[in-house]
Length: 465
Ligand SMILES: NC(=O)c1ccc[n+]([C@@H]2O[C@H](COP(=O)([O-])OP(=O)(O)OC[C@H]3O[C@@H](n4cnc5c(N)ncnc54)[C@H](O)[C@@H]3O)[C@@H](O)[C@H]2O)c1
Image (cartoon, rainbow, N blue to C red; front, side, top):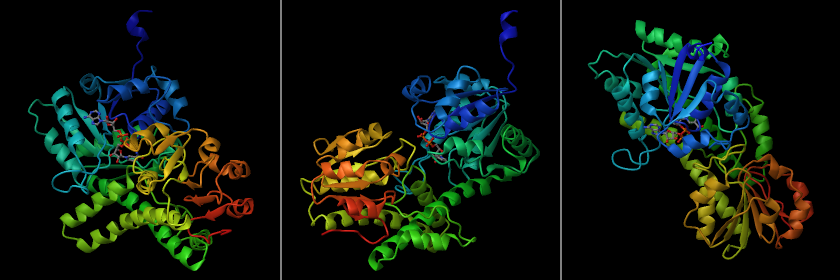
């Protein structure tokens, strides 16, 4: 057998620009489900690529390690050679970050498109053959049009077709969400070449996603759907959190209210858990983006409506800090407080926009001594709290973190925190011992019986004081 016989023939060469929380798992799933495609992921960050090529992947997602390690080197590759990747591929996913702009027009609200535009220009510079460009990043409405304008400025005969294919995965359940998505959404132009590109991409997903779950729309509707999906999800959290505060004042139980309300089939039971607030890199940024677009079109009342979802979330975090402060005799100075969880949700190490960042920062302002424990997020937590040295310790073992503390605040719903021996923890703490359950995950009456003063979200306080 000569050497060329051994090179597998791939029916598509897929490239993904951006090896992050979306690019990594999404492409790993395509490579896993479609051995007939060669999938390459590139990034400008060489450290990130080195981690993807190592035994310790840069992100934690249940089930991710297995599929990456099985496909890597077979039909899944991680590289920093963006130019070569562009040249060799026929389908290019763009999954770079699109954070909120921090400067100039739209600061604090509009999406910062600099990474995305650099990518568009790089594709234009390096491409020598026709390509389908797939917007995977969440982008403001009509960005694909701008992408087209950049790409269509070439005179070298290379043709691009731009599709919108927003990602709906949730961190912590990314692999499950990618394997069995509620839907895959593909937006395209309604031209002959647009429809052809759309069906090429639909065929990729059809390798494992049932046909009826592959939705096709025009590009603008697809882009907007992603922003709206996140806005609706965040709105449910802010809605139940707003009710939780009312429950605390009136001694109703928010879990019972949520159950009764959620049993209405028109409302549904999911996403009705009261908590310390939502986090993650997307909800706030995408809503603010929506707000910015509404303002741009002069829809100020609509903008205000969606902005209030973010405002309630900010309020909820501050309300939690104030509950702690009031309960602990209006002073936290010099008190050791253990924060159980720093990730923005369970089963991820991601701390972007985590409520824990705000709460930790406020507690440091109140001169508390913090001990942070989290099974996956301590590395990110250290970066987030840079400057807090001397006031913050990071300890992997929750028992050690709690020992000698005046209070525990549960900020992430890790299963581990439900299963701890709270009797042992209680014994090791300063008295009176407080527990602030920002996720309503522990057995409140049991903890109360152990001696804790228990402060859940949206439920009556159980206190011995
Ligand atoms: N994280 C989520 O749960 C989630 C879910 C759905 C959609 N999204 C959207 O997907 C997009 C990506 O999000 P993420 O969480 O994966 O971000 P991320 O920050 O984890 O990853 C983005 C990656 O892009 C790389 N990058 C930036 N500019 C580049 C360039 N010019 N060339 C090559 N690489 C470049 C960065 O180095 C980084 O590694 C965002 O638009 C986000 O809104 C995120």
